[in-house]
Amino acid sequence: MAGNGPLAGIMSPTTGAARARRIRAFVMSGLALAAAACATTGERYAEASTEPRLTGTEWRLVEFVSPKDAIGTIRPRAEEVYTIRLDPDGTLVAQLYCNRGTGSWTSPDIDKTMGSVSLNLKAVTMAACLPSPLERVSRDLANVRTFVIRDGRLHLNLMMDGGDYVWTPQ
Figure 1 (cartoon, helix red, strand yellow):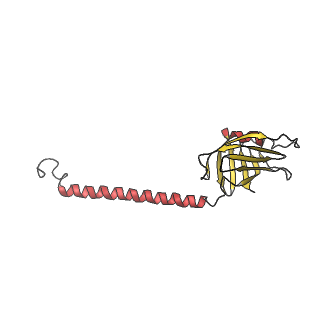
Figure 2 (cartoon, rainbow, N blue to C red):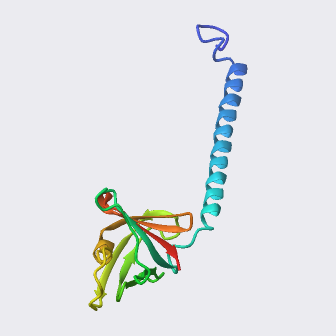
Figure 3 (cartoon, rainbow, N blue to C red):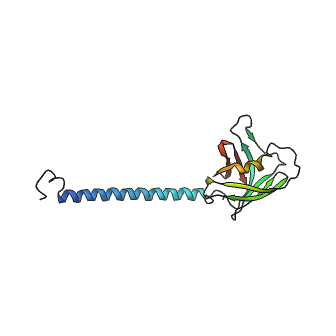
């Protein structure tokens, strides 16, 4: 009998209905918060989509920023041109000062403004360029692990905090 025993006041039909309404309200407020979070994420994506795309953009090297004080920031001289282009079909095309290179690239995050990326130069011409502190670019591309597109610039981050190559759309 619902009216007898120690749980009589707690398990009454009125209390059970009130509890069900509170649970329903709690669940609905949680769903409303989740919907608001999704809307905010969508707005962030829309804002991020004004950034240049990872694929199809020709990127020109602005600087290399090393975490090591002895290296610091290195910028290409006016006559040094370094560019990369990541084509949607997975082809990597590069101009490396007086040389050219081609290869492949992959990323599960191509439609995002940050994520992981793998670059693989397969062939590079071997013209004799003047010495440059940035001749390491062709070797370092294989050590890139992540990218960030922020403020219109592409940051290619080397593994183990090895540095950051900063590129701008050409």
